[in-house]
Length: 86
Image (cartoon, rainbow, N blue to C red; front, side):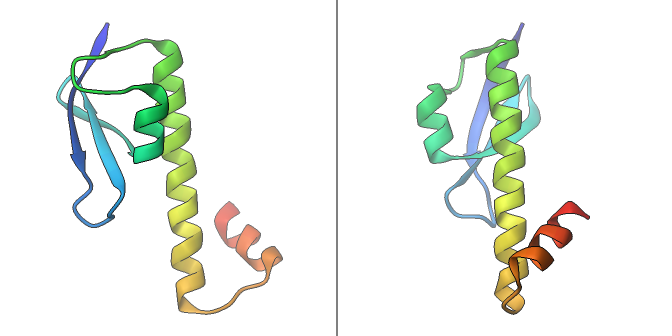
């Protein structure tokens, strides 16, 4: 079984936390996900927790990508959806 070995705040993204499992970067999630899943150093990562953290990491990455796209200029919802799908 794998174990959470470290949780650190992302250096460039405030409010995002990098979770290391077995001394390897595993996922970047929000503080809400950490609290919701009760993830802390020493917790054993089973299949359910692994899937939840990976899904949350993908959601956060997509959200951050959307914000980045919108920071340059306003975009229609169709254009934003197309760019995120790419």
